Image (tube, rainbow, N blue to C red; front, side, top):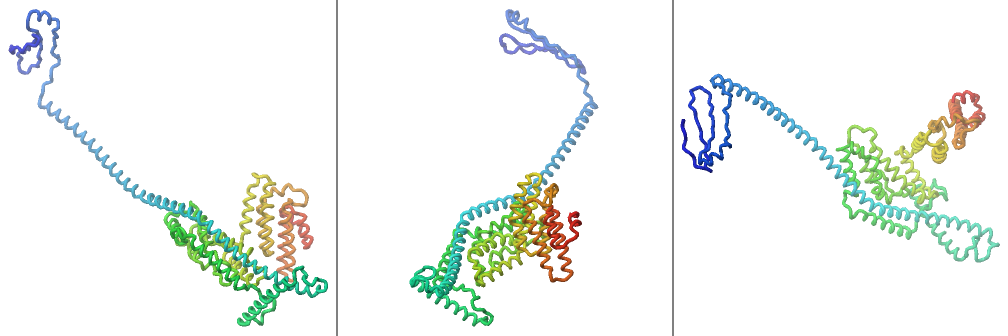
Amino acid sequence: MVQPSQPAEVNNVYYQNTYQTLSYGSSYGIPYTYAAYGSSETKSQKTDNTVPFKTPSNEMTPVTIDLVKKQLKDRLDSMKEMHKANRQQYEKHQQSQEDSTKAIERLEGSSGGIGERYKFLQEMRGYVQDLLECFSEKVPLINELESAMHQLYKQRASRLVQRRQDDIKDESSEFSSHSNKALMAPNLDSFGRDRVIYQEQVKRRTAEREARRARRRQAREQTGKMADHLEGLSSDDEETSTDITNFNLERDRILKESSKVFEDVVESFYSIDCIKSQFEAWRSKYFASYKDAYIGLCLPKLFNPLIRLQLLTWTPLEGKCRDFETMLWFESLLFYGCEEQEQVKDDADISLLPTIVERVVLPKLTVISENIWDPFSTTQTSRMVAIVQKLIDGYPSVVNAENKNTQLLGNFLQWYGILSNKTLQELSIDGLLNRYILMAFQNSEYGEDSIKKAQSVIACFPKQWFINLTGDKTISQLENFCRYLVHLADTIYRNSIGCSDVEKRNAREHIKQIIKLLASIRALDHAVTVANDHNVKEFKILTEGK
């Protein structure tokens, strides 16, 4: 037994290790005993605090080469399995990374188009807002200029009408003065006016009238129309030089003011070509959003003030008036939306120009006919007829409003069963049929087309209105319509007098159709009248087959 040297005394306590000699191959067990050394007092004090440790009872497995190899092999297999799992996980992450990269590239590519679209629409939104703000400031100025121009032409027309009235009064006064000369006071004429002052005015007007008449006669001689002319049938539209000068000065002033309306605005906000190009770009790039925004329906109203500004001096009653179809606005918008190879169904841009003619040209023509046109002027009347005929021939969808009224009537009557019959009849019959549609029917030619139009109107009426009717009269609101049908039958009959047998048979068939129409709305009293007036014997068959 080896006993080491005593360590330095710490509180007079140190530990003693005891080793036992063991044979080779035996298990190792090292017992530990602890004992305190020191003074007797110290020993007596520490004896009770001694802690004994027991040696483990398990013995270690003998280490052999096979055991080591087996453990190494197991460890290697475990690491291979772990490496394989890690490899699979790595490949999985690699594939996920590649998929994510491709998805990012794909989304970046697709988001590029969406980004451009968003940017474009935001720019269009800002452009339209600025355009509307510009128009909200400029449209009142355009309205004032247009009203001033209309007032100028109206004053000139009123001046010519007043001059004609004065000429008629002069001639009437001249004849009256001869017949009542003895009965009148020497200083008054037949109208009670001072004869001296009035005679001076009459002489002046007579001289001017004869001078104008002589100039018109000279103009006819130069054009070779003297032989075909009858005295008194020429239009006296000539103005004095003073009136012409004043008119031109005021007209030039208005035109000068009109040229300043957009002088503080950049071209892209008042040029029709620039505005058109903006919306054409939207249409060509993103037609779906263009259509969803109903731009085709908004463009006529958007171009309205700019076109009215160009039509400021347009007066078709004048000989030198420019045709509106040769103006810049018409030529600019003529082929709007026609760049596509295939026509898009229900494309509102196709009717852009007809809609503009309906909403801009027709209202202006209405103002001209009400305030400027002189019905006594043959020249103005001929020009008015020419422009109206041009609109009828070139824009039939604008002039033929009967189809729209009939369609509106049908839309009204679709509310049958929801609205009361009284309200519905007031809206559809009193408010639309009797007020507008019948007026259009009466101003159109009487014939087969009139019967078809009447059929389209009757087809809109709910059948329940006539089922419970008693007697031979229809509802009271349809009396005007029934009288129109009776008049239509009489007109067809009168037009067939003196015609061939075929035309007479056709007229008789048309009258039978009218009887059936009257019977279909329970207007049996009117149907009997038509049948008796035109000797239709098949009345019972016609009314039963209604």
